[in-house]
Length: 85
Image (cartoon, rainbow, N blue to C red; front, side, top):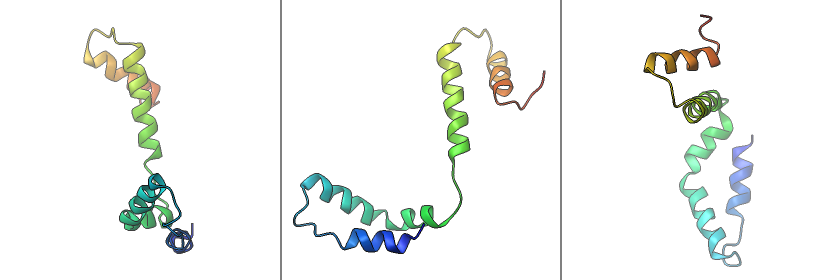
């Protein structure tokens, strides 16, 4: 997770010999340098939240026939093991 080494490598690229699509990606990385640096250096992630959102979307696709929102909410809570009833 050495962000400085990563950006040293990125900035050492010769963009004159890269295809246009790679140059656009290169420019994107440089524009987002601060955010990428924080993501590499900090141990925080939203992976758990993204997983929960994915489960909720799967429930919505499979069980669209719930009669009430209350039943839908119960199903979500049961699937995430936050409710035992």
